[in-house]
Amino acid sequence: MSPKHSRIYLDHAATTALLPDVKTRMTEAMERFGNPSSLHEHGRNAKHEIDWSREILAEALGCMFAEVVFTGSGTEAANLAIIGTALANENSQRKRILLSGVEHHCVLNTRLILEKLGYIVEVMPVDHESFLDLKKFEATLSDDVLLVSLMMANNETGAIQPLKEVIALAHKRKVKVHCDHVQGFLKAVPNPIVLGADLVSVAAHKVNGPKGVGALAVLNGTKIKPLITGGEQEREMRGGTENVIGIVGFGEAILGHKPMKLRVLRDRFLDSLLTIGAVPTVKDRTRTLDSHIHIRFPGIDAETLLIRFDREGISASSGAACSSGSIEASHVLLACGYNQDEAREGIRFSIGVGNTAEELGRAFEIVSRCLIEIRGHRTA
Image (cartoon, helix red, strand yellow):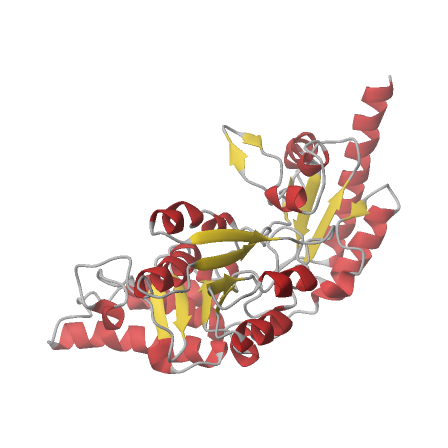
């Protein structure tokens, strides 16, 4: 990497940098050190900060103030939605729960607990581009289904799922719907709550807020039980003293959010990558998040490329899980029908605050050079 150039961050789908105003607001909130559950003034001041953020988040989500439950992460919020619903309905005759095959592991791995609770968990199939197969989904639905969980937008491919249709079909059967909205929140996608979702999970660190705080919208009429007990915080939905500073940061990040015109940047970069052999996972880019590019360079595994990119000053990812420092085959691509080798080839570039056309031009030059060197080495 040339010393005159700074690193290029193209992994906003993994996490985002704090906005300056968020840092300032969180620093100010440190003075509100009282326990929000205390009755005295110090406690009331801290509680006021939480309520301030709850009101901002409720407005952004499109739900009521009292329907917002703060959690420690988006993962916890999704677990609370799914397992909490299962716990609240153990005496119901509805014993099937449907999860799409391309959900985040925080959703898919709830299966381990759900099955111990006596539920039958079924994975809904997707097509080759990671979109839910609506016909097969409709055929799977029946009156014994309790809950469906479908993300708004896929964290790896950026595919925007047909949530509106899923909610309509599910509600005809009186089935509840959870939407993992972590990737789609504050982006140019339909609002899951406006579409009718019963449970919606989000996370602060994906929208230029702090790590360690998430939230779950529990719409009126949806029964769930807490996973963390021992206190009456969050209207008895999540025990434990609240992370006041993080929650304040979440609220400030939402207030400071400015819609970005990422599509032009994304499209130019993607068009450039196509000239050097990139194969997009989703052909119709209008059906993906404006921030996402998910591609493969057939015959070259993602790990090889990402290590080279890192050395050259680009921070990108595959979006897939890592184990012992090695990238695993993407469960998303496997669900799409790719083989093990192909499922290790996925590269995700995700654009966000701070990225410029000049940066992406430099990124293309680096990617192109790395590919030439790798391909040349393999044919030598």
